[in-house]
Image (cartoon, rainbow, N blue to C red):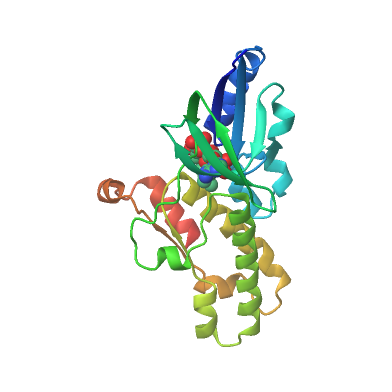
Length: 233
Ligand SMILES: Cc1cc2nc3c(=O)[nH]c(=O)nc-3n(C[C@H](O)[C@H](O)[C@H](O)COP(=O)(O)OP(=O)(O)OC[C@H]3O[C@@H](n4cnc5c(N)ncnc54)[C@H](O)[C@@H]3O)c2cc1C
């Protein structure tokens, strides 16, 4: 019997939800084959990513293995590289050896998420740490700690100032949460640095840059914005 093949590309919130639905319905039928392809073999709970960056949670606390969630849907950990719509085939690479894989489909569901948008702001893509993946959160935490260490080596307040100045580019939900988490992390951690203290944080400032042109135009000084600016500066 020829099976109807469904491929779901991307195992984030959208792809995994679809896979879980098809796991209970289509995937258990003999005439169907459903495959989820994703770069990581876990689902990342992004709403808590900032807590990993701040060291409040361990990375393992906000991920769940996809293979443990699915029963009849097949899972392939691989990077999707190309889609041939006329041949109804996807090309991927997977594994440490970067094995090339080709999989046929009758139906393809694309749920690959999005990429960070830097809105062409000069220098941001060169200098910023992005906040999208688990490794981004770990990198941000390590970067903040490295800057604290470097600031501790500096006796000159003017040289310390740029090391302890943090800018969040992006004033949405994730930006505000990450800023708050890093703010708390810094203020809690500074006590382990004898030559730095809350007072030396006169030079620690957080600036929320709203990158979306429309919201920048429309956003006035709301009570919440004023409160955040007061607390974080
Ligand atoms: C820090 C942060 C905090 C957030 N907080 C909230 C919140 O509190 N509430 C809320 O509603 N939303 C929040 N979001 C937004 C939410 O995470 C996204 O809206 C949601 O993840 C989008 O789901 P998706 O399935 O479209 O994409 P994603 O969840 O990004 O999933 C895409 C998947 O596709 C995989 N993938 C991408 N390209 C390839 C490829 N070439 N080959 C193989 N796999 C690939 C990715 O690895 C990923 O697993 C937050 C986002 C971030 C970054």
